[in-house]
Length: 117
Image 1 (cartoon, rainbow, N blue to C red):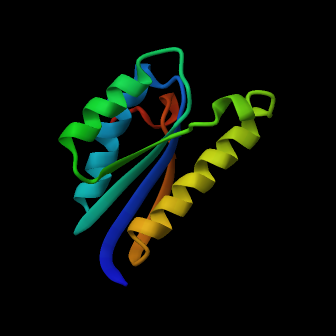
Image 2: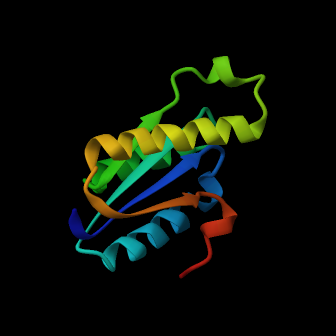
């Protein structure tokens, strides 16, 4: 077990409006720990969410971006199923890249977690 390490995950769709604030909050959470990783699972959006995530991926080596390649296969599913699928993909990746991390957090990437912490 790696002491005082956290993996922070989130499902992301149509969150461009709040994403920079959310990522700032995630970095603040990460700064409390010895080490942190961020895993985001992106689904097709109608805004600039992907561009923001791709730019962030270039500047933060702790960031892992997963992209849903099968969004059409999920288009008829309820929103809750899509969120559960995204979170499960994050968990799979977390277990793969940081299985010994001591802490884990799943956050919302919209207005719910965009207020400064």
